[in-house]
Amino acid sequence: MTTIPSRLAQTTRISRTLEEARQRSTALYRNFYRSAPEICALYALDVPPSTLRAKFRTQFEKNKTIKDLAVLDLMLLKAQQEYQETMNGWKQVPHIMKWFAEEEAPARPEGFLEKFYASRDEGRGPVVMARVSWQNERIGWVDRFNIVALSPPVASASKTTSTKVITLMLDTLYHASA
Image (cartoon, rainbow, N blue to C red; front, top):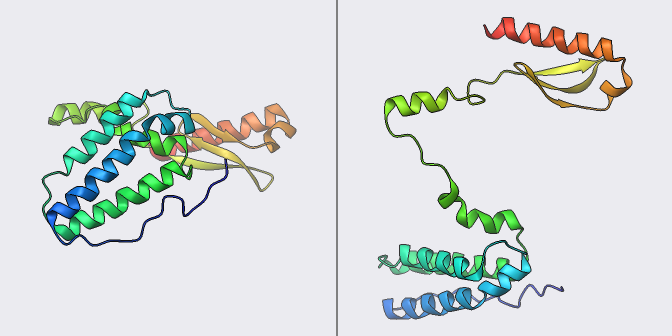
């Protein structure tokens, strides 16, 4: 698909009245609403157009109480840019799915004990990272007791030697963090 950058471009406008800003907002909402099936097809989303339309509606309704014209104009400009970038295919699937991130995120703990327990979950404690080298060449990273990443030089080194180097690093890390 050929992208024409100016296809959906609009000049920056300043609303003179709240009614004019409301009309522009309604027109932009309709553009988003009508293009939901095209967005789903363009980005091959696993989300039906109805869910996308509901998300657009909640975003527009969230800001319907704003009465400051300067703020409204800025929000309309940013929303128009978002629409143009989305419809021209200048985004990737994670950018689109970020619209749904707040719905999928787990609830944050509220009380002291819940926060304490959440910080003690496996993998969420303090991480000590160290660089592992083999013959002055970085071969990877080690955190506490897990090998995070290894580069190809490990494969060329003898297994026993590389295992000794990594074990030595892990022992050093353990004693340094204890």
